[in-house]
Length: 138
Image: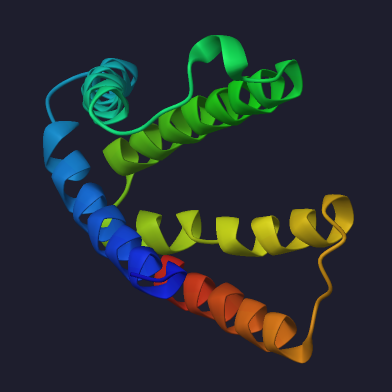
């Protein structure tokens, strides 16, 4: 499978995540819900890594560790905010606003990774932004 099919699967599972998380966060503190979800993901990812061809931890460069740890911290902060937003708002409104992360990723990729932005990025970003606003403020 190519990157596009994997991306579609990611979107499918992320969409299901919003609905499942909304139900799961209903009767408990959003931070505890995030911790439970994180523990499940940790065990799941660990099992996948153990049963696939992975690098020994000693072979992973320090720079890679730093950026993966920073990515993990950003993910954790995102999830804490996301679960709190789900607890307070409707999943059908929270999820589109959360997807504004696409625009942030495009901007950061251009600034830090020197990826070039085409008119496709600008138009697509405008549609994502517009769609998030329309769905957030019904």
